[in-house]
Amino acid sequence: MTTSVLPLSFAAGAARLDSTQAGWTLLGPGLDSGGFRTFTGQIAFDRAFTVPPVVQLGITGFDIDKHDNARLQVGLVGVDENGFGVQLRTWWNTRLWSVELSWIAIGH
Image (cartoon, rainbow, N blue to C red; front, side, top):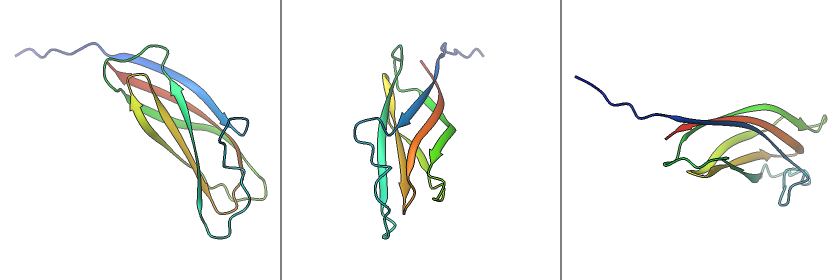
């Protein structure tokens, strides 16, 4: 029995999402209600995949105000053949200036 394995393509990179970007809401005033604040940044692949790849994302650094708890969630949104979105989320009084990420995409 033979199994055909399609060749895989790989892409990798690093990104910094920070307060200089339009729509950054993560430095907002302290919230007593525990409400969430989110920001979504876009990452584009240098070369498109033929189908949406599997993406692995890692946090390599962040800058959070020294007086605040480090409340940060990071997730992928909208992965397609051309790139993906990274959603950052924080809450309560945490003030976030930047997040540094590394990523790898594997697909066809």
